Image (cartoon, rainbow, N blue to C red):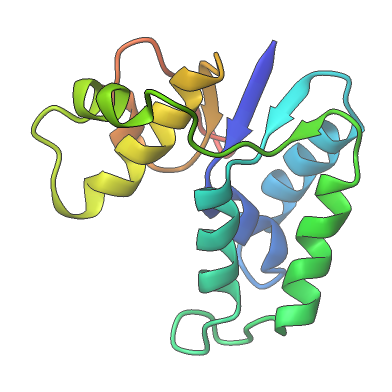
Length: 142
């Protein structure tokens, strides 16, 4: 079985002031412990870095060094994978996205990557992922 996480899970797991910190941190520790494959797609990683280092979003943003260290620690695990778009991505994105627009475009991007690599489960607080057939959404706070 393989899974992925959305940027919001990484953000909650890095923000000790957020009530979602304990369950999301526990989830990441469990996933980091293996043995299941965990995909951290580049859009998720970059979204995480954008959010946790932004002083207008978090009251106590992380330094870039602390944020990248968090990601590096995850990427050092042997069962964590990072992949980007492969050949055929654009056609699959068009088939996946339908009439997607605005803020839903990054979700369609992530779902397309999931489909390219056979990942069917995403841990996220974003309910919008439920609209994609074949994608299992797991809320780490539920």
